[in-house]
Amino acid sequence: MLRIDIISIFPEVFEPVLGSSMLGIARDKGAVEFAVHDLRDWTSDKHRTTDDAPFGGGHGMVMKPEPFFAAVAAVKALDARPATVVLMCPQGRTLDQGLAEELARSERLIVLCGRYEGVDERVRSIVDLELSVGDYVLTGGELPAMVLVDSITRLQAGVLASADATEEESFSWGLLEYPQYTRPATFEDMSVPDVLLSGDHARVDTWRRMEAIRRTAERRPDLLSSAQLTPEERTFAEKLVGDSARKGD
Ligand SMILES: C[S@@+](CC[C@H](N)C(=O)[O-])C[C@H]1O[C@@H](n2cnc3c(N)ncnc32)[C@H](O)[C@@H]1O
Image 1: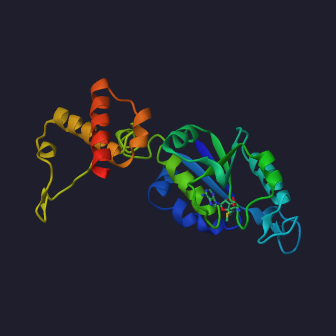
Image 2 (image 1 turned 45 degrees about the vertical axis):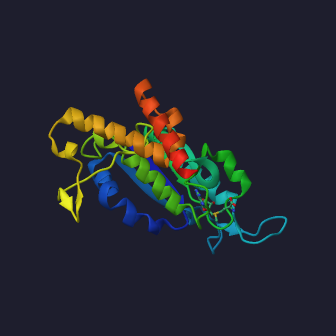
Image 3 (image 1 turned 180 degrees about the vertical axis):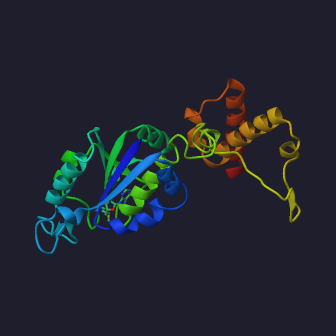
């Protein structure tokens, strides 16, 4: 079972997320184990200080190295299995579905959340992977850690009702997901495509595949080069990309 330890100065923000909905169910089913630790437990002064002014001057505070070193060593010792230490950091590798799938196969992750101006550079020496959730800067690593935990927990066996749910969704085919509809079949003069009401599963599958290619060509043509497409599908995709480029001229 995957075990995820999170180290933060705001441990209380995690429980509402880790205990709710799919993540809570995953935990209850034993598909994943979460433990959240207060970094301040590894400080040694009476104010439980985790930050200090940057050497060389400048604005803001930097997170001190000692509590992270002590916390990572102590948390590693809680379980004999080797752990991958992940630092949430806007300068890290950007999380995508491929990386989430890779990390979902881990046995243990220890996730470090920064705050303020980030962590003392020496903390990087105990980190295996720096991970960003996108090219923007947030106040702290807690929200990025929750994004990471959600993306890998839903990939654990038995968490979602059907394995197909993750196999067909956006990025898993290297494509965006096809359009989805539910009842009613007609709403405010907008009707569901006939093929979805036909009961013909082969036609539905073909329609979905083509619509996934269409949607990707329109919204994220950059994904098409690495998507697995048949020669006919690639010709179709290239035509769509050409058409939308001409429309944009
Ligand atoms: C205000 S940020 C520090 C940014 C840092 N001064 C820089 O310019 O790279 C504070 C903390 O939030 C987290 N964080 C902010 N944006 C993030 C992102 N896009 N992805 C992952 N973590 C992020 C990191 O843990 C970081 O240490």
